[in-house]
Length: 143
Length: 143
Length: 143
Length: 143
Image (tube, rainbow over all chains, first blue to last red; front, top):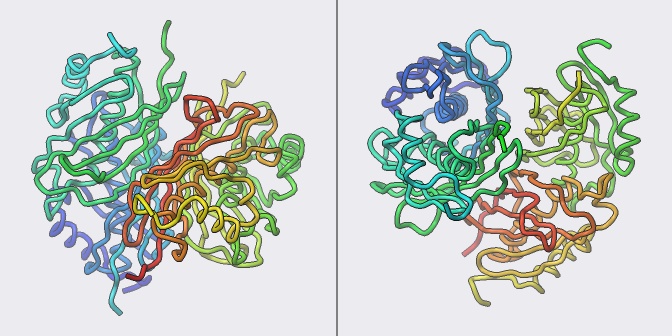
């Protein structure tokens, strides 16, 4: 596989369907490469707050899932990464009736810690609605 | 009302049921006073990840809701506060089959910004499973 | 001025020398444009910890100063922005004997809040030593 | 030693003077026990910004040093902890002409990660000027 990736889009889709059956249907991987990936949140009723805006927990879940998958793409499905921290800024109201797209960047993939950040956009809008940085504890890996 | 509170438990319950009907049933206010409040997440199937642990987004939602209600208790239901940022640390695996309890502290209630933090526990456990700090933008208030 | 900037490098240099005479000599603006700027920390003895690595507070100061200047470049020297929060991740040990370079991105420039993030590199190294997001409260602006 | 502490105030003072000679003179440990410690920043000219307020980097340095010492008090001087992340909120302007006091809480002391938070006060003032959470990577410990 190119770009040092150990899982491609099909592999990540299968992993998500197997491991997170409750939420896998909400998400769709749009792109994956060596620098990160783009994940779509298929916004529906359950993600909305009164007024039609996407809820904070739904945006958090999108960022967490996206960076997690970006790490798995690099280290493979055998690893069991755990989210240890997140900082998130909600900067603009999401546009009504639009999916959210999350663009990730993997900043560090260390022996025990991985760090990635994400920008979240309403589809078709140029300015991000939120940004997030997430840190994961990753278990010891074999050779 | 005592402690400089503008809303008590009954008022906050009613507000939550009216404004957040989709999630109000998941939460129960355990205590409220001038320093903050304690909010329960009634953990059920939809909050769980494989292995029986409560998901990160569910813990985020609990902390966000708890600090938000702690602010409303002080400024009243007329205000429309918006979450602007959160930093959260996931420190221990929640105990299986237990509700989560979130204890908040209001650290600042300024003219345009409010800051509160929260410790989240599995019920009956002494060590917190997570901590969070949340910041809210609050609209101009009348006299 | 181009790019919607209200201050260029010379203007920012003068502002820094006037307003922050104690630290202005440590920093040098390398580039400024509509998206952000690059600020150099001229590392010397006082920034170092035992072992020759740049201290955390020095990296924090670099990121804070860089994003602050990126905001002033856009809103002009009349504004008085105050740092309200920062999240920072220290990801790699800085290279010994090298200056640090901080690349900023302005993510939001709102009516009362501005948000920017930064990547900090040891000069000549491809991987960032740290990342930071900073939020500023900005006072009401005239027309 | 009581409270499960491996270093007391005298031990921590000596450690700081040996390991951080450049900054040790700025700080004084006021109290240490099993839950955390209180560290004083002896504010002088170099910590101030125009207007007489303590600078953000000085507040960051105080919180980082305080939580670091609180961890060392528990694990002893042999360990080499490294700061991996910090989230900090600047909530009020420090009072002019007063030292800062930092009260820490150790929230997690795990195998590879430690988490603590801190409230920073101007001496004699009831409301905190800042809050911070810091995370440290701690190296493997012997038996």
